[in-house]
Amino acid sequence: MPIASAGCVRRYSRAVARRTGRKLLQFDRKLGVRFVAGADEAGRGPLAGPLMVAGVLLDYAHLRDHRVRPLACLNDSKQCTEAEREELFRAVVGCAERIVVRAVSPAQIDREGLHRSNLAGLRAVLTELTPPAEACLVDGFRLGPRAPEHRAVVDGDEKSAAIAAASIIAKVVRDRMMRRLDALYPAYGFRSHVGYITPSHTAVVREVGPSEIHRRSWRARAYMTDEELEELVRAESA
Image: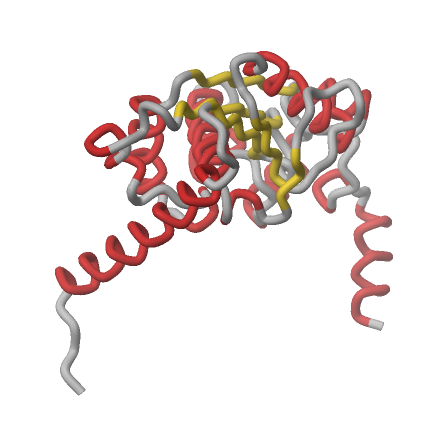
């Protein structure tokens, strides 16, 4: 069997991405309205850093022909490489009618809980986009009666262009912030893991303690005493 060249693989990957982008855009267009808002977040799982919530408003009266082409490869941020996310970030910024981003601090997460903080952030960004948003889409969550009228779309960042665009914005903005914070907290390696739990991150926190931007409410190995950790290891190996 012949081996595909790197160029062929890249062309195939972009063709697949374009089909994905078209599917996402078609989902939103089928709603039959002009202004579609999508909301999503990045950073639910990390040990350190903020939860970043983003809302993106797309104007489907203007997203036609050459104006929509930059979104042809739009995809869920989790399905993209860092370079692809940066490229899509520029595309979304160039095509969106409006973008709203909110950072939820580790202190707020510790005080109010991750889920409540996330819902509050999603409500806030959709409220800022409504009006003119006629349809509001959220990745997976119902936001309660205080939010604008909205639709919770399960796996929405894989179905809706507006939600996928919000996922790209939230992820890129958060990663950039964490890499800048690496200069303030150089011991923790934020530039490489952007606050997520890794063996090296856990080891540093256990050695020097958490920073001001660590989430203290997480029950993580990094915060366990030696006795608690030994008990956990015994339980896992039993």
